[in-house]
Amino acid sequence: MALDIKICGLKTDEALAAALAGGASHVGFIFFQKSPRNIDPIEAGRLRETARGRAKAVAVTVDADDETLDHIVASMSPDMLQLHGHETVERVAEVKARYGLPVMKAFAIREAADLDAIAPYVSVADRFLFDAKPPVGSELPGGNGVSFDWRLLAGLEGQVDYMLSGGLNAANIGEALRLTNPPGIDISSGVESAPGVKDVALIDGFFRAVRAATDNRAA
Ligand SMILES: O=C(O)c1ccccc1N[C@@H]1O[C@H](COP(=O)(O)O)[C@@H](O)[C@H]1O
Image 1 (cartoon, protein in one colour):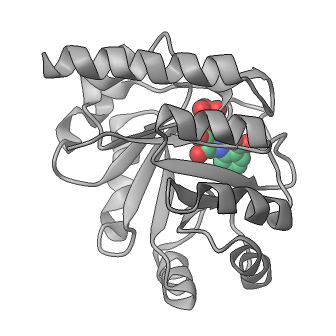
Image 2: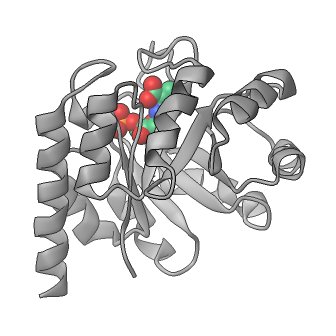
């Protein structure tokens, strides 16, 4: 099965063009005030039109209330909602029903026991996203450029649909894919020259590294 690739935290035409040219299956827009990648929903709506029909537009939110989600969904008509906060199973079900959109629920992983938390969500979430726990002092629940022990996901192959995320970059993606064989991968800081500043050369390099790793895998 083809590997899904999500480039997240996009804010500019140039970065979006590089993500699409590289073959991103998903492009992510962050709606979280404290993030250096935070984008206005109207501007995200403009960018997502470029991606329409080429990559799925994912709206990333953190414990957002209905009013906030209403505005995001109306402004940019995402293909998917990523819930990256402490949303309960009930809240995930409520959001799915309210917007009729697939939901990807994020979980922070440090040890094997952290994966137990996904069990009640299996029948509700369309997909999971596994990220590292934020470093102490970080105000961001994601986008910290930190990875976790990928070997923890080894038993999940074929069991749940998920994206591997957290601290991925061109240098480590080969090892990450070798250890986990995930259905999808998600990257943000690893293709930035500074927090919130996407770098076209780094985006190109990431896709090259993914291709090299997946070619090796197929061979
Ligand atoms: O990127 C952010 O600023 C962000 C803010 C709030 C919630 C989620 C966020 N990002 C998500 O985290 C992953 C991993 O990021 P990184 O590659 O480790 O920098 C990112 O792709 C988003 O899905």
